[in-house]
Image (cartoon, rainbow, N blue to C red; front, side, top):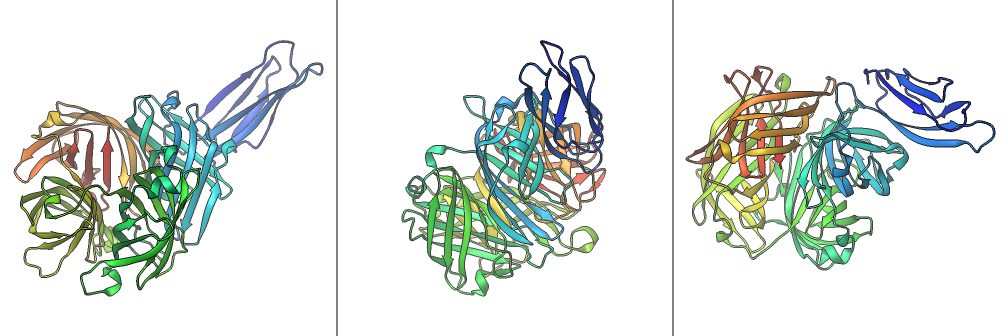
Length: 569
């Protein structure tokens, strides 16, 4: 959009007359028959015309049958550069989960679609669920004729998803390639200027798990989900817990939830809230439903999108109300028995919550925390990291305390100096689990084992794709892109960004970085501005192929709305 382009159609054989176009073109673009076996599609798309435009080109000479060809013209959002020519890296069936905001409040979209490796999607499968403050739509078909994608040589690109409810365009970054050079993961942000902003993830699906039996056979899952801070009357909500899916017609489990600082519906017992019933059903297109009856609260209906037999994405498909807030997240199969010794090594913990007055204009803002949990002895822990509360950075941010672990994998954490647990984790496996707070910050996060130490600047090298995750408030700038760490102190790459009141744009960067193996913060890294005078981003190495980052500074000033980002190879 805003950029001039030209495309020439050429016919062969007998002189063809005329060459015509059927379909609606965006304002500013024209189709002209040149009269010499060629026609030209050209022009500068007008503002507000981002989207896809299916057209049919017909050539005839009055003797032979007409020759026809279908084309899809894609108009990108202003400022976002969509690469092409590397579409083969995006092939297979993908699940996606997107969360963000529109003018009315929180938004979540989850779905599945097939990508054919040439730029076409939803030819074999394509459906999504949409939950907005103004209403919910389920099983909405993705229209293959007006949906498409492109991918450049750096594995960045654009994805257009069209349904009867409208068309959305996303900047995407892809990676975690398998042995067939196919992307198994990706990040996405919306860049179409249609009034919705947010970020999400893409996951290659395993169709062998597209049945109720395949998922239920995995048994116990830990899960975590949350909602952005809504401006539509329902505020931030997070939930973590476990479910046993082995009996698909009678699901059970337990959970802890936090709505605006009220934990477990106001319970003061410290016990988890039982999940007393529910049902699971998975269709052969990878979409399913999961209902959960929570004791004393009610029944919540969710759509799920199966990644594999041991993982699925999910979102609440009930209308957003004060007692049924929007939430969306993921579930992972639990492995092994659980005891205090399940925490026995360093973990990188990263989380997003809200602070009531630290944001723009003194309103709510993001409160982001990343760092390392160490276990000096069983039932004792120490955390050292960085916390950004709006533009205020606390570094180091530290606390110590004790913990307990029950057989379900529920971990209760009590900080030294406090009498009641203030944090909880539901373990997926040893040193890994979904994390939430019991305070008014309404934190949701994840803890992962840290591997690859001792750490130096050379510990992070190669190409990473990255994107915003857990966007807590609407003023956060969403980013996705690719970054190359050269292993000796320079990071370079390309980032796509979208924010309220700004034109989505693509920008290149090249900056210095370094990594330390300091006491309490092993694998902590910093990315500086070009002059090397200020820290722009802080990151922690989770493994040689995964990092987590906070952009604490931008444009020379402290970032009042920092974002939490995940980078993976």
